[in-house]
Amino acid sequence: MRWKALAKRRDAGGPLKLENEKQLLRNYYAGLRMESPNGGYLMLLGLRQGDAGDSVGIFECSASSLRYEIVIPKATRGERTKVRAAIDDGQDPDCPRHGRGTRLVRAAGDLVCMSCGLAYAKAS
Image 1 (tube, rainbow, N blue to C red):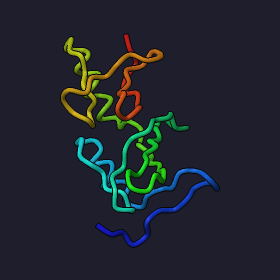
Image 2 (cartoon, rainbow, N blue to C red):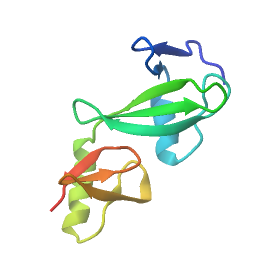
Image 3 (cartoon, rainbow, N blue to C red):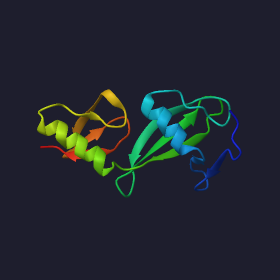
Image 4 (tube, helix red, strand yellow):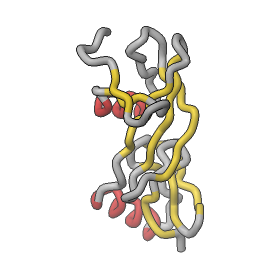
């Protein structure tokens, strides 16, 4: 798959920003391989907290070793409501984006998905 614009650099020396973030995020949430603009695949290196409740995933291309960043948008109201409903029912909630098998864990007073770095609810 070839993209019209491969990537744009945010900061000098920083990771590149990909143009087709929405499609790549869908693949990431589904656990599918994410194709790199350079012919390889993107591998997750780490997650860091964003400024407004979002998180930033740093990925590396398996073919070129270039690094890319993808902003993972903060949890929506519907996702937070779904998690709170699961807690109220006495269940251990799963990540609304990654689905079954990806449990939310307690971190710093929040219930957080370790795969996307987002807080979905306050831990009780």
